[in-house]
Length: 309
Image 1 (spheres, rainbow, N blue to C red):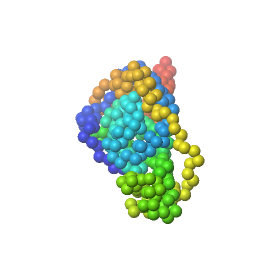
Image 2 (tube, rainbow, N blue to C red; image 1 turned 60 degrees about the horizontal axis):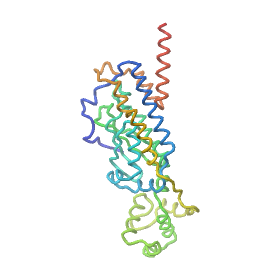
Image 3 (cartoon, helix red, strand yellow; image 1 turned 90 degrees about the vertical axis):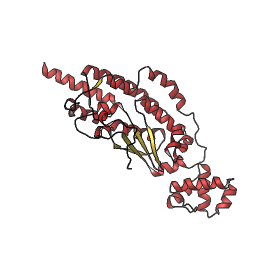
């Protein structure tokens, strides 16, 4: 999904200034702090599944402004702030969200002399949130990157369409689809479902947006598939929203500072020829977590020390 960087990104001259650790000891200390914070967030996300009603509320947003006001999106952004990333939704499509990340510690840690996209961790984190917290298949691509010379990092999260349609539909939507599949007239359905004319029009508009009906109310192939699925035998599972627990964790995390602050305490601007060497950057890009990265760096240093002795 093409996405033009916004004016909120870094100044180009600042974005091009590479950063490098002052010493291995300082970098190790930073990575240990980052790993501790990451562990807290990963544990929270793993247990923070959103109620289906909140997932549905997010999916029904049609603009970035609406998405910003959805509790689920606010929760997502709060989690990402804890790992040093300001995650801003800038575009909402039926099966995709576009995000900007104006600043991120990963940009500094993975910067090299070569101009290339480096925010693999951020892309994976966005996908993981949609998969684990929302229960939606998701693939996230980094579209623009500060380390590639762009003014801001942007990401496109593409959702699996059948997962999204299934999560989007509420009980009334399903009955509406079943009625249309049975050949009932729209006005009869409106009365039987106790909908006002504006409510019916709004539902048809959203069903059309997700490719389930035409604007005139005719079922599409996807709409027919969902109309013929059996209705759930039990009500949707209801459980407390996870942002209540996040509020309890936030204070503990705050005492250790943010990812961004932790990283920048050990990073300082230098001239481009002295940037982080490509081998270290490649090692970081291939690591799946800061714990793994820390282990790789430690082993590399031990190996170098042994060769010197």
